[in-house]
Image 1 (cartoon, rainbow, N blue to C red):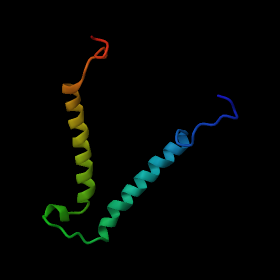
Image 2: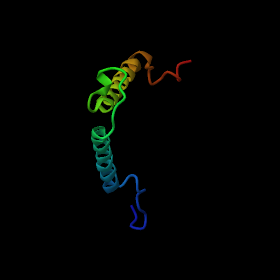
Image 3: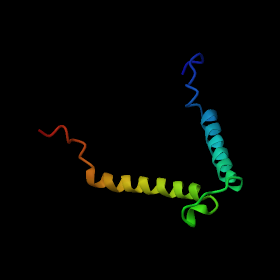
Image 4: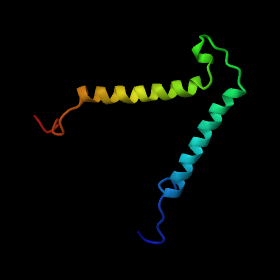
Length: 84
């Protein structure tokens, strides 16, 4: 790579590290905000501390696992479009 050519700012290792740290700080602040926000719970469980954080995490993990399992059934061969 030429010295005059620079990588895009989103692919620089320093920027990626800062984005990860910033994301973790933001997530921690959102969980800590649960101390100051009174939940208007419809059920007993959604009034617990950090409910929306762990529920969102578990839901995201569940969607990824479901997509992986679905991919097993919907997967086609690499030569799918070559077969005629």
